[in-house]
Length: 83
Image 1 (cartoon, rainbow, N blue to C red):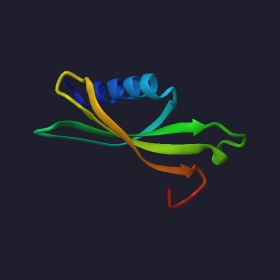
Image 2 (cartoon, rainbow, N blue to C red):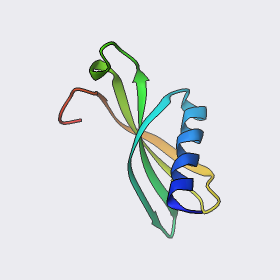
Image 3 (cartoon, rainbow, N blue to C red):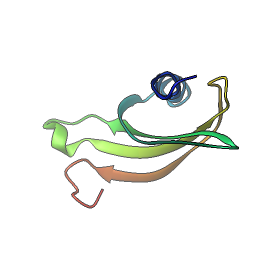
């Protein structure tokens, strides 16, 4: 599978499991353990959107694109420059 295909699968599977909306992908790498993808997910939508609550999820996908592990590693307000 290609990197873009893995990213798409990661976003779809994380959305299905968490019920959240994927926002951006902040990292993608591959090693002997599989594909490591970091996705920013919107946990709470607010107006204006700079006040959205966003969380960082790290996922591990196997070579067929199946999510085998994920965890939330950080939660922040979108406007937080240190986020």
